View 1: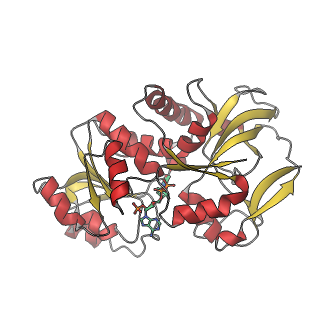
View 2: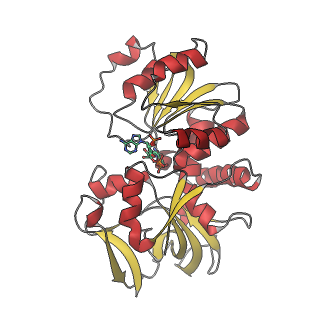
View 3: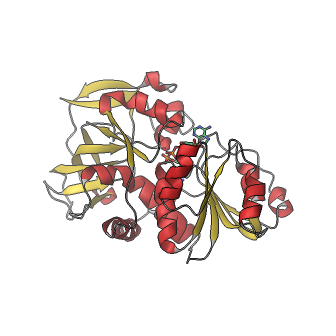
Length: 325
Ligand SMILES: NC(=O)c1ccc[n+]([C@@H]2O[C@H](COP(=O)([O-])OP(=O)(O)OC[C@H]3O[C@@H](n4cnc5c(N)ncnc54)[C@H](OP(=O)(O)O)[C@@H]3O)[C@@H](O)[C@H]2O)c1
C-alpha cells in the first residue's frame, strides 16, 4: 500500500484526505514514478475548489513531481527503471508516494538538478520559459510588469528577466516580499496593497508604460494591468489567484490603446514531446548555469497538503512550496 491525497467533493482544504492505495501498474506508454518531492501549485487549488473541473471524483490532485522511475509500461523507450525524472503535466494525482502517468510527459533530470529543485521548478520554470521566451519573445531592454513577484512563478521570473536584460517591475503585498523580489532581480517593486500601481509605473517608466504585463492575479488586477501598458502592447493573463477575469467587453482593448491580450497555459505550449524537451533544455540550462536559483520557501509533509494549500491561498508563502512524501 502507498499514501495519496484525494478529494471526493470540491471545497475548502478540509476535503483533502490522505488515503492508502495500491499503486497501479503502468499501462502501455506509461511509467510509474516513486516521488521524492511534489510541487505545490495554485492550479491544485483551482481543481480542489471546482474552479477547474476534475475529470471525475474521487480524484487525486497535483500535476508536478520528481523522483525515480519505479516501473515502465510497454512501448516506452526513453525511460528505464531507476532513472531520475520529473514531470509537470497531468493527469491529476502527483500528491502521492507513487504516480502513474504518460511517459511522454516525463523527462530525465540532469545530474545538476536534484529532486527537490525539480519539483519546485518544473511547472513554474516551464511556465516562465514560455511566458518570457515564447508568448512574448523578449530580447532584453523591454520593461514588463509582473504581479505576485515574490511567489513561486514570480521568483523564477524575476531571475530569468534579469538574465535576459529585461526590466521587471514586480508587484508584491509586503515589504518582506519586496525585498525578496529585488534580491531575485526585479528592477523595481510596487506594493499593490498601498501604492497606486498605474501612477508608480508611469513614474518608473517616465510615462512610457510597459511592453508586456504578466497578470496571474486575475479579477482584482485586470483593469490596472491594462492601464500599465503602452499602446498596441501585450496583456498576458495567466492565472486567477484572486478569481477569474470574466465578462470582458472586447471594446476595452480599443479604449486602453489597441491592446493585444492572451490567456495562455503550460499545456498549450508544452503540447508535444519536442516542445516539452526544448522548453526543459532552456529551463535546465538556466538552473545549471546558476542564472536561476530555485527558492524553496516552504516544505510540508504530504499529509499536510491542506495546510500547504491554505498557506498558498492565504498569501503566506514566498518562492516555491514542495510536499515531501
Ligand atoms: N497559465 C499557466 O500556464 C500557469 C502556470 C503556472 C502558474 N500559473 C498561475 O500563476 C500564479 C502563481 O502561481 P504560484 O503557484 O507560483 O503561486 P504564488 O505566486 O506563489 O502564490 C500566489 C500569489 O498571488 C498573490 N495574490 C494576489 N491576490 C491574491 C489573492 N486574492 N489570493 C491569493 N493570492 C493572491 C499573492 O502574492 P502577494 O501577497 O504578493 O500579492 C500570492 O502569494 C497563479 O495564479 C497560477 O494559477 C499559471
